[in-house]
Length: 190
Ligand code: ADP
Image (cartoon, rainbow, N blue to C red; front, top):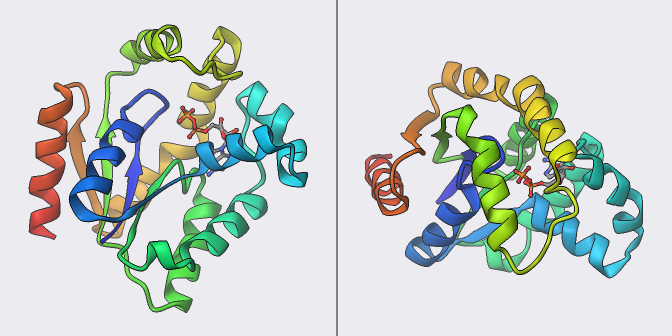
């Protein structure tokens, strides 16, 4: 099973990915987590992207595509994977398409978590208050930037995958388990 979870910051991608990891024994590949780990480790990549992350901007397509290209080849992805936070631009989606083609891998579905944008700031602020680990980009300014970047660069992927007949939409404003069961029903059908 190979999937993309698509949705703005705060849509619940991480929460749903965790269920899917358990149910399907596939790997969650969160580019945000990968980049935060690189920053924490102060690796070369980490030092390069730290400021970008803090401002809520996107790191370069090239960097993120090479990160994913290396990752999906590893043994723990043999059963499949959930892409969470990638692709985030049309260029990344094109690159992913080529990458998967070159490995004769298909995508099973692109699951969009549709949410009421007006509620997102509230959700993310709540997460920031309740989470033990404070994210350097969960402040008002970076949040506004992340949402704006989503609207401009990532939301066009809804149409991109829609045109390719791959998009499945779930109402992400429902209770967490209802969202999970809706996703499960979709995946049963693909
Ligand atoms: P969010 O909660 O905003 O969905 P993520 O944890 O997915 O955040 O990502 C955090 C940050 O990591 C982004 O704001 C961006 O700077 C960087 N990032 C993550 N994935 C990508 C990507 N596919 N392309 C470019 N930058 C990315």
